[in-house]
Length: 315
Image (cartoon, helix red, strand yellow):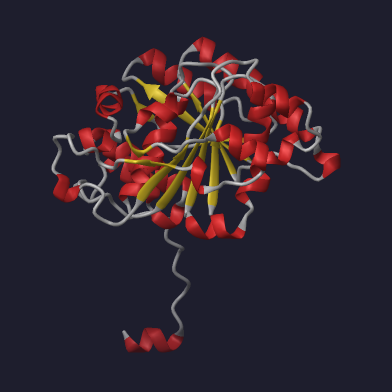
């Protein structure tokens, strides 16, 4: 099971939208996806319509140190009332299960409880290391709160890869650099205990076709050295699109609303994150990317070596 955790120290950069849409695309491709809403503001919990709402959620999972069936809700995927072509939606056997957030405030009992636990940093990782759980799901994506805290620390430590969306504007870019450096420093301090910061993949999100947006995107890429080389800025950028809002309203992934513009960028992003999925398309997609995005995934060919004498004679 591959585990992603989305992190951001500034709100409004599309963290939850990115989590929901990556999970939705993976499920549409036939994968078994577990979403964990580790945010005190349960936006991911509300994103998809639930076919089954479990009586418990994040609090019971973290406190008990295990993920039992009474903590797992099931998304209705797609919702029956969605007007899209259901013959091409989620027809490959994938599904979305969700551990819902049931903590509403910063001073919630879970936050207080975690602060008193010596093993708080490994509480979520301990849950996800269960062999039966790992056999039941292909991918887990954890959405986190937009502030440093014990819950975010536990979600970061549980990840194989950290996803860090950033919007191409001055305030978001500055906060991203400062927040990322603090996150790295915070978790590198635990190196003596055997922990390490997972690979951090930055996603430039909500780009626009303007000079300012392009300039800020390049400035974000130029911060690689300042962030001590710990952050890789992905080539794929996610453009601003109304389909993301429509998708959230309809409680479906945005590539079902707009399989061209949104579908292209979400497939391209997924291929960068999981290279062995290159060339795999959702059923409602036209099975090709726009030339600019497709070029990001063309593998360079190795130069041919000099012909041998026998090859020359054969020619």
